[in-house]
Amino acid sequence: MVTTLVTVATGLLVAAAVLDRFSLRVVALVAVAAALPDVDAVLAVLHPGLHNAALHNVWLPFIAGGLLTSRRVGLRERLGNDETRLAWAMVLAYTVAVAFDLFNVESAAVLWPLHDRFFAVYGQLAYSTTEGLRFTFFELQFGGGELLPKAGRGTVAGGYVVPSPFVTGDGRTMRAVLVNAGWELLVALVAVAVVGLRLVDQTRGES
Image (cartoon, rainbow, N blue to C red; front, side):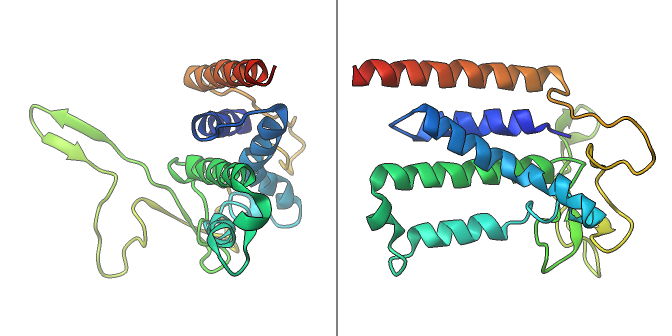
C-alpha cells in the first residue's frame, strides 16, 4: 500500500511542474489535498467499509473540476488565474492520490456510493521468447464479468475491507508507515529537492 507521505510527495511534484508561483502556502494546500483521500481510514471507526471508499471516489474531483470550469459559478473570475491554477493543482494532487490505490492490489471503491465494489487495476507488460508480448492490465470478460479490469469482488457492506493502520480491533499495536519501500523513499527525497529548489527560486525572484 502506498503511504500518505508518497502521495503528498507526488502531489507536490505535480504542483511544482504546473504552477508558476510557488510558496509555503502552496506547499501546505497541495499537501493537504494529496493527503485528504487517506482520511477515510479514520472514518473506518464509523464503518469499516468506508476506508478506501468514502474519499477515494471519482465524484469529488469531478465535482471540483466542474465548479472550476463552470461559467455560471464563475470561480475563475473570482479567484484569478494564479488561484485557479492552484485549485487545479490541488485537484490533480487529490486525483493522483486516489489513483495510487486504484492502480494497486489494495484497491479503491472509486464509484462509491453509487456502486459498492472495490476496483484494482494491476497486471504486467512483458515480453517473453516463448509467449511473446504480454499485456495483462485489461482482460475483457463478458456475461457478468468484471465491470473494470482486475476488479476486486468485495463490497462496502460486505466482508472485503482494506486493512486500516488506525483500526485493528484485536488489540494489536497500531502503527502508521511513512515509507514502505526504497522507491517510495526516492519519491519523497526527489519531492523535497524539487520543492526546495522551487521555493528558493521563487524567493530569489521576489527579492
